[in-house]
Image 1 (cartoon, rainbow, N blue to C red):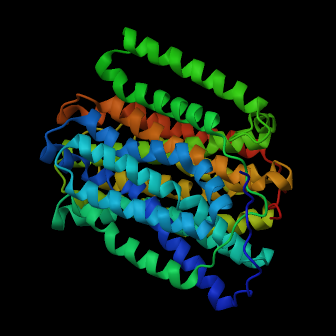
Image 2 (tube, helix red, strand yellow; image 1 turned 120 degrees about the vertical axis):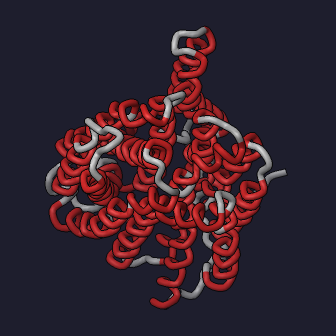
Length: 468
């Protein structure tokens, strides 16, 4: 029996109010995905005490979400193109909401980690699918560019404000409120989707690449997993050596399989373009730096200095403000002068913020902490728009959607790596030693900033945003 993909009939064009309503609904889901990437960080000490677990298990409660999200982003986008974007988007909201309730009710860390992974499945159906819905709803290139600028600003705001919101919730209602808060947002998004978001599909849906999906998931899980477990099993122990070997084998198999498929999940040949490969590595570096910053700050301020979750979350407010203010400014600069200038600004500010904390001790002044967090936030705000533009503009116009999906995957992979690296640095460290143990992490943040300077010189100075 053969089947054909039936495309929907022509729909009336949305008016301006309808188009921006679709953007608002999709941004609501994007805010939810970004918030859950970082909101849990500030509650980790409280979760650890409540469930009686240490740093390793706490790392998995964060990375179970980001690992699954990174691994499934591209496949979820392909499913939406084939079966309907609104349908997959609504499914993602239901899965994300149900998983959030499981997290809130989790009786043990094992259940919490499993529920966080399920959250990642739902989130993978929201981020790329919502962006495709927005692009489809806005055919005018100028209006679409403004919409994507709003989209990027909402994403940056959600990531940066997670610790602030999380700190307030944990202090007032306990760590389970970090997940209860998702329920009303999911319900609102579901209702608004039914009322305002039209269905759409790709004219020609990409074939699913199940072997590539399985191998990509294996590579991401093995590389991050060994970083989390390494301090506990020993970096040169037989299990660790076996994990290294399996990672290399899985990566080699992934490249081999993808090079031979007519429609690969990720085409390795794309990385022959210098600007594209530099942008992908830059996206990894930015999210490594952000997540190293968030986890080290949470543990240092709460466990090392005895601050409350609310105080620790509030300390990251300069980071949130810097990211929120500079994200739209960065998009404006990219449109005017290309990605090089904002990338240089991003690298400079992030490097300065990391260097400000490389000599961190238990009594480091609060003003220095706040200034360093602000500099890192400014760097993060300037980074996202030029990295996305560099990735997209570095390829033929027909590969723009693929470039965006790969860059999103790179961001989430970087987030998972950052949590694993930061947790490994401070694993088993007494509260009094957290400041000293975290110093290499701040050097890494500075190095990530410096890498953005190199990415800036891989981009062309006048490289404008690619046409969609």
